[in-house]
Structures are given as C-alpha cells and as structure tokens.
Image (cartoon, rainbow, N blue to C red; front, side, top):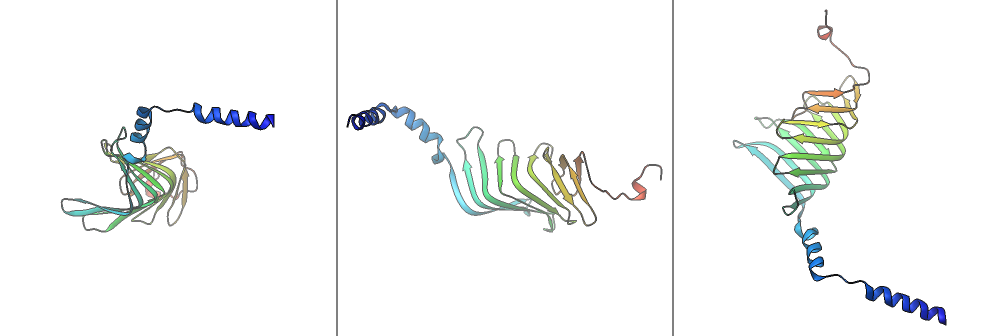
Length: 185
C-alpha cells in the first residue's frame, strides 16, 4: 500500500511541475506548421515571353514565407519538365523532395533523383543544387549517367539547365571516345 501512495505522489508531482508561459506557447505556435501554406496535387507552369518553359508537378506543395530564409517545398514527389522555345521537351527531372529559395532563386533537390535529357541520357543521384546566378546544376554526391552506349560513374557533377552538357567529377567506367576527340589524331 505504501508503494501505491508513493507512485501516486510521484505522478502528481510530475503533472503539476510542468508549466509553460503563454508567451512561450505563442512563440512555438507562430513557428510551427501554422506558418505554412499547403496544397496537394499542384501544377505550376513557368513561362518566359509568353512561351512555356517548364512545368512542375508536385504531390504536396508548401510555402513558408515566415521562415528565415523563406522557402517553397515540393514534398512527397515531384516532376519537372523543361521545354525549348518551340515547346519541345528538353529534359524531365523526378525526385522525392525539392526546396526553392525565392530570394536567391536557388533550388535544393534530394532523394531518388532521375533526370532524362532530350538525347535519352539518364542521370541518377541523391542530391542536386540549382545555382541561379551560375545557371548550373551541381552535386558532390555520387552520380550515374547512362547513355545508349555506356554507363559512367562519378563523385559529382556540374551541368547546364537542360542537362545536354555536363562534367562528371572523378569519372569512372568504360567511356567511348571518338578518334577525332583524342589529342594527336
């Protein structure tokens, strides 16, 4: 019986010893998910000079303008299609997550990234960063690029916007080279 009273006394002490100030609660609520605007199954069309340049399909799209810095997230999967001036598909990017920082125009893309360019070349990696000032994608994570004739591996990559030109860091694998590209031929 004494143990029962001891446990009851201990439980009562724990319950009544936890107190929060109203200001602390309000501060936590202000920083929480209430600062986020959410939408499901979003399609965003990007245009320039009246021409469609890209489309973004996001399973869940979140905007948080109160964060420092403000951001927009595409969560639970996304697909981005980019087009040339004649609206021909140039590349497709799929991933599970992306975060866009509108103040700088930079994008962080993560998790199960696959990019396919107009030549049918396929890039796979776990992280890509779009640098708006440089107009380039880059990563320091391992990459795999499959073309019609070869598979290349590397420790990183730098690429243009539509992935038609890229440079692989520490390239590995069997690479075909045209005789005209070999110095001295």
